[in-house]
Length: 186
Length: 291
Image (tube, rainbow over all chains, first blue to last red; front, side, top):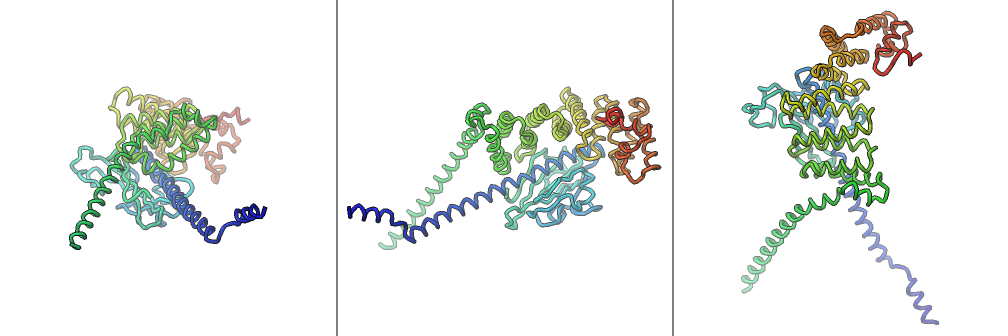
């Protein structure tokens, strides 16, 4: 009888502080891993914005050209079309990665193009256009290309993970719809 | 002796490191090779997916959608062939035909990718949008996207003047016409739609479209452009019953009576017989319906 009581006391003795600490540490590690994975997943899904919006811009540029015989440049400021690419020429003007309303105060060229995404965006956008004889930045062999034509380059800049490395999604009219992504996928 | 041992140990360590590295590279290659099988397994055939979902097909589509969204950027359009995108879209749309986003996403993902886009990919994208329109016949965005894809994505890839090219441009005009009438797209899009309709020898439809949207356009230069196109179409013999004259008269009347309201609002608020006639000219409305 005494032995069975001793066994019972021994088995229901609970856990030591060290055991509890080990459990807490393991749970913490698991939660940390899950948190990191979750944030990576969220970033990945958010990076879809760049492709979707560039596709929308490209479709409108093609339709715009069919009617007005030129592509419509659009960037950071009204009345002065961008002369080069880069985040400083892109709209919205806040730093890439921050959530910003696109339509609020957007330069008139974006409205002229008919591109006005509702709500907020995380990427920054710019459209540079040019005549057939001018060289698109970052494109080699254009001057000798038999496909020389009016061109546009639409770029989206993002820094979703806030590591100060800006990723660039690029769509060039002379290259079909092939997207180029540089730096990282976020 | 000690130096010899150290040298042997270092050599052995380097050899082990090199071997491990080779093994890792081989493993990575075999994993990449196996990915196809894995991805095929992840995107099951609709029939299989329906069985696996135990009747909860919408939940299954949610899972597929989350998967597609997560891996869209760095996997699906980056490395995998377009057949995976077709599989995703087909499975999602067959399991849950009311999931409208799958049609728009499927078409976009097939056409805008980091790998080379073939003409068949664009044809597939068009078919995905047509499938969406069959399900949502009154959705202006699906129709507008279909028009843009047909005219500006598929059209330039086809031989100019071929039967398919002409059909694509004609269908694009019709799709854009219906989208524009529903108010979708930029304010100048009706002009592009009218050009496509005229190209397909459907001048009366082009004229009707431009007359219908004229009242929505507020930018003076664009309005002038639309009016001039209307005049050109009328000269070509497309006007029926002096519709443009009526619209112009209504606008003059608005400018005299209520210059502070928009032309569209005036058509509805105005009470004169002339205005009632104008309402009848707007697509989708008739004077009789409003009485």
